[in-house]
Image (tube, rainbow, N blue to C red; front, side, top):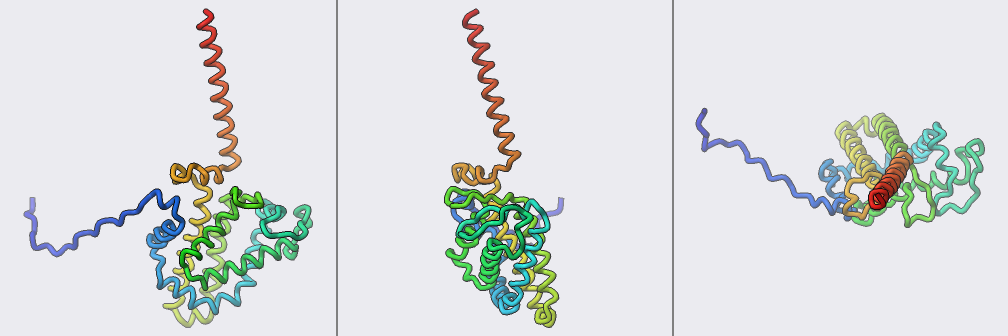
Length: 256
């Protein structure tokens, strides 16, 4: 065996940073900070997003229109808009055939999405802003604190994020101002990519079961899909039947 070299200059690996797992599920800002740090989303990225704000702002109406055109491409996502969302007091379309892109409730939602997109590139990214990003995720689920009972299943949320990511990257990559600044373009696109994944996490937390032991199962219950509910119902029914059989057998043994 080769002798150890006491003069080796190989750097000693840094100890991994400790992450408090329970806090990831009970402290929204701590969760945001961890995911951001892991993704290497930092002040440089925030600065890149804010620098791109003058370029993004004029594109917002087009982006919003494209988002809703995409959502209207499938009946399962279009159908969500037949439900009354919190804050909307106007007239609702009665069915998919009467729901169009200039319907009153769609205009209401488009206005919300437009403001949200502007905030993404102008926000302070402090605790209050992170609370807002978390709220955006929460309102798409059927939570007790919501007046409406709309629950958008996560498969559609994730699909929209995938489409939106591709659309935004292609749109901004071709922007003349960014084409003239390759370094700035790279920083802007990287920052936007990281941000969308971070926002996606603040949606996903209300669907997955991870950390349910720290939140008394409230997040997990919100995320139960129709199939999950059927499985749970089957298991409960099976347990009840098994208990009944056990009781009957036990009773017959006692009587025998």
